[in-house]
Every structure is written in structure tokens, then in C-alpha cells.
Length: 163
Image (cartoon, rainbow, N blue to C red; front, side):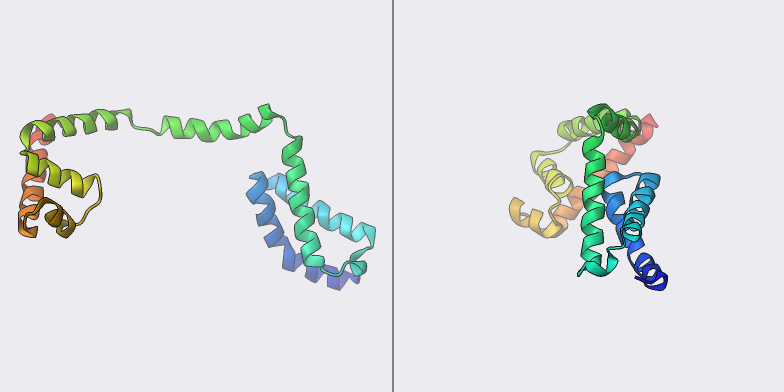
């Protein structure tokens, strides 16, 4: 294979092969090294002209080598790579959210009629439309709207005091 053909092959396939390796390894440098090694081995081996489907060969080789890299990692290494992601999820969680939600639910349970409470739950918990809620509760759509507006007004007034 001429250097010009190899250059075209490299430019055409490198981005796709890099993305494939990155989906498996999730490490920028490791992916670049792996893909470049595959191309270097292909060039050094001098077998480019013998391979019928060069694109398929490259994809299989990158995938297999990436999987080999993963299987070679110890459990501890895998954990260390995933641990920062897990820590980020834990530290970004707002624990006050649960308290606020509990207070809101408690307020709604103590201040709403059973029908109003059911309407609010159908809309906000179950994602029902006003029309669906009206049909389920046997009331009109304007009545559903009235319950929602009244409840939101009550919540604003109650929780504005606490802010």
C-alpha cells in the first residue's frame, strides 16, 4: 500500500475508530494510543493489500484491543475510574429537596379536599393532562384548572413565609 493510500485510510477511519475506542475505554490518551497502535501494526505488517475489507478489519481490531485493555484492568482500577463519577453524583444531590418535598406533601394532605388532592396528584405525580384528570375525576376541565390554580396559590403563600 502506498503512503498516499495509507494516509487516506488513516484520515477516513481515525475519527470513527477513536470514538469506538472511547465508548469502551473512556480515556482520551488510551484511545489515541490504541488506535495509533492499530494503524502502526497494519503499516508495519505490510498486510494492507491482503485484507479484503480493511474498514471491517480496523473496527474489529480496535474493538478487540479495547476489550482486552478492559479485561486486563483489575477490579480496583475499574472502581477507581468510576469512583469520581459516583462521588460527583453523591455530592451534587440536594438533601434539602427531600425535606421540602415532604413538607409540601404534608401541607397538601392537610389543606386540600380529597378531590383537590387527587387532581393535584394526577397532574403532578402521574403526568396526566387536565382533560384526562377531569375525565378520571368526573369533573369539568375548568374545575381542574381551578383546583390547580388555588393549590399553587396556597403553596406560594405558605412557603413564601418560610423563605
